[in-house]
Structure formats: C-alpha cells, structure tokens
Amino acid sequence: MKTIYVDNAATTQTSQKVIDGMIPYMGEIYGNPSSLHSVGQRAKEVLEEAREKVARCLNANPSEIYFTSGGSESDNQAILSAAEIGLKKGKKHIISTKVEHHAVLHTLNKLKKQGFDIQLLDVDSEGFVTPEQVKEAIRDDTCLVTIMYANNEIGTIMPIKEIGKICREKGVTFHTDAVQAAGHLKIDVVDQNIDMLSLSAHKFHGPKGVGALYVKKGIFLSNLIEGGAQERNRRAGTENIPGIVGLSIALEDACNNLEENNHKMIILRDKLIDGLSKIEHSALNGPRVNRSANNVNFCFEGIEGESLLLLLDAKGICASSGSACTSGSLDPSHVLLAIGRPHEVAHGSLRLSLSENNTEEEIDYIIEQVEQVVCYLRRMSPVWKELLTGERKFML
Amino acid sequence: MALYTETVMDHFMNPRNVGSIENADGIGEVGNAKCGDIMKIYLKIEDNIIKDIKFETFGCGSAIASSSMATEMIKGKTIEEALKVTNQQVVEALGGLPVHKLHCSVLAEEAVKSAIKDYYDKNNIPYDKSILPDNIGCEGCHMV
Image 1 (cartoon, chains in turn brown, orange):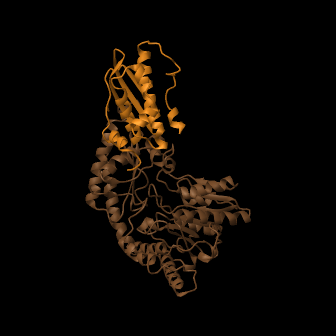
Image 2 (cartoon, chains in turn orange, yellow):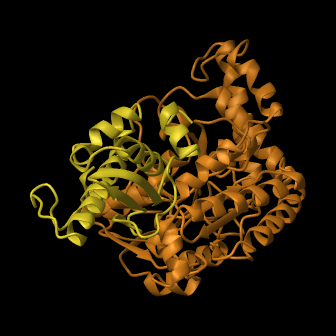
C-alpha cells in the first residue's frame, strides 16, 4: 500500500539535497568550530556560511542569527530573555494569544508562576488577532509581545507586520514563533518589524533537532544553556554542524521555491477543502484566505478524531487530530476551543498538512477515504444517532 | 501504529457486536461527548442469560476496542457472571492498553453494569446498590 503523508505540519521528509549536503559533515569534515587548528577552522567556515545563508533568507545580518536545537528552544530563549530584561526594568506584562504553540504557552505559564502578568488575547472564529487588540493591550509595563506567524493547527496567518509596527511604535519587543512560516511564507525581519523570530529546520525538509533564533541587533539575549562561548556566548554547546548545514540548505531551497511551491499547494489545499466540505455536518477550521498554503483542518460532528486517524492510517493516509485522545490529555486542542468549537466537536477534528510533493490523485483518494471513514464511524456512534433523532442538537 | 497491541487493533478494525437491539431488555450509556467518549450497550436477556449484546461507541480506538472485547466477554454469560467482568480483565484480554487509555476499559465495564442495572430497574428486580450505584458513569474520565 502506498503511503500518503499529509502531516507536514508535524514534520517533513528531509530532502535528498539536504541529506547529501549534510553527509560530508558527519564524515570527513568533523571538526569542532571552536578549535584553532585547520580541521576546526574548516568547520567554523561552514558554520558561518550557513549563518549567512539563513540571514539572507530572513533579510537579517548574520550576527543576528543564533543556532539552537529547534523551535521550542528558540521560543523558550526568546521569551525568557525578554522577561529577564523586563524584570530588571520592572516590566512584567507579556502579551500573547490563546492559540500559540505549547512551546510559547508553557513558557509563559512558567513566567506567570514567577509573578509575570500574562495576557493571552482572544482570537476570532478564524483564529486571527488584530493589530488593534495588541495596541489596546500594550501598557507601560509591557516587556514583550509574542504572537505566532502562522498557526500550526488551523493555518491562520497573523498580521505580524502590522503587529510589529505597533510594537515598534510603542517600544515593546516583538517576538514571533515562525516555525510553521519559515520556508513557507515570505519573511523579511526588517520590513515586518520583527525583533525576534523562531524557526525549526524539520518543518521545511531540513533535519530534526536544529533551529534558529533571529534576534535584532541591540535586543538583549540571555542564554538558556550555560557553558562554552559558542554562538557569541549566547548558546553553549558544540555546534550541530551537520544539522546547521542541513537547516541552511533546506531554508535556502524553500525560500528559492517558495512561490512555486505555494502555488502548487494552494491548488491541492483548495481542492481538498472543497471536497471535504461536501461531507455533511463538517466544518473547516481556520480561514479560507490568509491561510497557510499547506493546511487543511476539519471538524466532523459525531465522531472522535483518534479513531478517524487510525482508520485513515490503515488506508495509508498519515494525518493528525486535535482530539484529547491524541494529545494524551482530557481536553481537545486549545486552538479549536479558542476559535469557539465546543468540546464535543473539537474531539472530531482532522488536520491534513500538505507538502509540494503531494499530488492531485492523492487528494482525490484522501477525499474519498475520509468520506468513507467518517460515514463508518458515524454508523457506530451513539452521538451521531442522537443527532439524527434530534435528542442532541447539531452544532455544525 | 505501535500504540496499540494487535488484539486492540483487531477489535478496533473489526469490531464485534456493533449496532443496537430493538426492544432491548437493558440499555446502558456512559461517558460524555465533552470528554470524547460515549459507550452505549444493548442487552437481550432470557432466563438470566445475556442472549445478545450490541454496542455503539463514540470514541478513540481503545474505546471501540474495549467495547468490542467487553461484549465478546459477556455474551452468553449469566448476569452474575457478566457483573464479575472487570475493566482489568478487559485490558488483559486486549493484551494491554496504554496507561492514558485505561479509562476506556473502565467505561466498558461501567457500560455493561449500567445496562444490567437498567434491566433490573425495568423488571423491578432487587439488586445490591453497592455493586450497581445510581451514578455509574463518567468517573472513568477523570481517574487517569
């Protein structure tokens, strides 16, 4: 059976070009960039080349790029660092949204326990916050605004340039978690008024376990990991050279092909959305416009998401869900709840995230199989039966 | 997926006794759509024996597999025997469940008990309230 991989928001397949580019740095070029000798200096050169490549993709200066272990570490470091500076200035108010990734939300929660005032902005039914909401929320003691660029679950693209502009005007540091945006959406840290930005290589056909944090010159950055003087004293630990090289190749490739890939994925995405919309009592989560080119997310009333995933997996389709059962917690996705989906409905969600390697035939197959599986699960669902008899009210 | 044992996957992919029974002698429904799982069990009882049993489940793979296994385990048994089937036995028969899925087996045990209680209530048969309390239900949701 053919595998159809539509879980690219979870991770992407590492491209052959990236693998080929990384291999020499796991073999012949093994030096430690901190070593003074020629073997080490060769690795150092490669490290700085990778930094330049990444900087070019973001319209940043190479000295503003710090390599990390991934998106979560970048988010943690950016937020904790801004909080540290805030604390020194007596500013303990942080603004974010209810739909952020847990790497942001859990870090903010930690700060809340330390006495920070964390304000999570509501989003509308499509997952957007407005620049006006941010403007209204900013206070004299606000030390950080952290708002994601593109939502990992429902694909909402936030108006980060406008939010960044407001932050700039008010003199508040603006961080954006761009893990789902890097390599997929245009990033220009200067034009978009971004002070700090997190990205992760494996979301754009790079390797896992490596990411980057952009920090605008002049913004203070404290370190999360203490030790040696790597990354200009801001991130200790011998650099993951193969990973960093892989990240730089993948990001450059993604940025060079960004428009072409998006054009292709938008056609597939819209076909998939149109097809799944035909299933009765279903609803698209997230917007139709200003939506990530690769994201499709639906709720199907009367069924639960994990069983949907298992049945699709048996048909070769690899997807994900925001149901409680897939998260290991009792609550379904905080993002689906934040856009107003009731618990009952949020349990029945399905996320299909595409790559440019998916085909129209695959989309046709997915639509057909999802229809069948939803129908099968509804036939054995007491909830669906009650919806049909009117004992329970349809919500979608 | 390695999340579940082969037996769980078998009962999930090919669930036994799915459906409903018209004019069932006992019906039990436990769980809550808000929590993400509801199990409904239908019993046909003759001469104190569970002649037929069907289930409908809204829930994850382990909820469906637990329902299927529980119905298989009590079909043809006397009511007393059925009442002795525990969630632990359902888990063992399934070859184990992940820790965060154990509540699904609890729901299966409770759904069976709830259906038997309904049968007793409908037929004015006295029973031990300590075994079949009035509030059989969503406890499983919050125990793990």
